[in-house]
Amino acid sequence: MMYVRIVEITAPTKLQLNIFLDYLRFTHFPKNLKQGQTSAKVFRVNEESAFVIAEFKDKKSADKIKIMNNPEINELKTNLKIRSFEGPIEYYLD
Image (cartoon, rainbow, N blue to C red; front, side):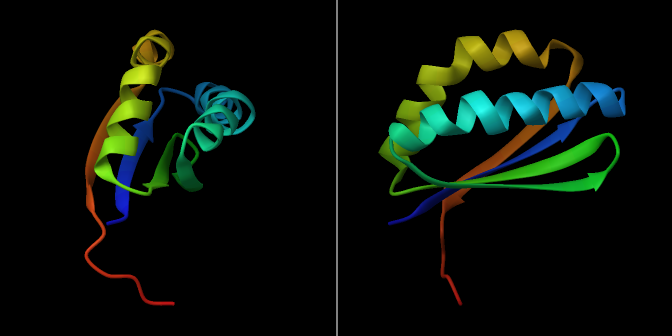
């Protein structure tokens, strides 16, 4: 069953958010997509906040990638407020 992780990111400044989103785009997500993440979507709420929607084939894949990235993300998020929500996709309409 497909699994999704939604992450809310709030930075103190627009510049700090831009730096973090660039890191996600050019370093973090390409690595995750090679390791089994199926998609990554990012949208801004305002100049200092954004949401990430990451999809995985299952919870096992999501957990594997989370563990793989924990030290790296923990170091980068020191000035950021990050909240995460995750669970299996209930249904998908297209």
